[in-house]
Amino acid sequence: MKLFWFEIFKTFSRWRTYISFAAVALIVILTEVVMKVEDQAILNRMIRSLQRDFFVFGNVLNAWFITAFIMNSLHIHIPFLVTLVAGDIVSSEATSGTVRFLLIRPPSRGSIITAKYLTALFYTAGLVFLLGGVCILLGLFLFGGGDLIMTQRPFRIVFVPEALLPGRMVLAFIAAIWSMSVVTSLAFLFSTLVENSIGPIIGTMAIVITFFVLGNFPFDFFQTIKPYLFTTYMSFWQQFLDEPVPWQAIFRSAIILGFHNIGLFLAAFIAYQRKDIKS
Image (cartoon, rainbow, N blue to C red):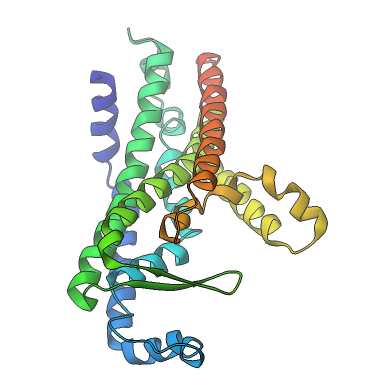
């Protein structure tokens, strides 16, 4: 536990750790302010298709809708911000020349790599919770509350009462953390294999973007391999905003992502155990 808190202190004492937090806060604030300024035009575009078949009343453009909108918009950007620390947390020791000193100290290699991994997960959770906190709090201040009305594929309209939304949003952000933890695990694995921070960041994002693109190609071959791509399951947080909640699909996605986490961490653990500190 002391080793974990030492890694937390070391990670959060570096200024570059806060780049991601600042970027998330800035993006959310700018997005919500612009949406507030142009709220009527945005609202007209939102309900144009709905007004053909429904009468729409109430505060449709509310904090809950804004939060879901921003989360959907940042599903590629957040993984990049996650890799800035997860891809650097081990490789930075080699870059700074402290890896030999670190590995000859009394704590075992297993303890060190586990503490670093938990620190990377802690950072990921903090980043996603910051996103959620700023989205919801600023959204409630600027737009107020209301029921959530969203359109989902294929040609579905989802209505979630406001009374259910706080709990649903908490579950959605926990699921988002679980999704991002796979990106963290992948970047962490790469960080144990190389001695610079750029490689893990580029390698992780290359895989994430490639998997996203392949999984969205509407061809039979790519649809066949789609179930084997972890990115297929990373948006399962959206299902908490569905009605009714598809619990079976959620559990399946969470378990698959969990197996990815375990496999990637074990690979990183083994790689770190075999790390040559003499070269």
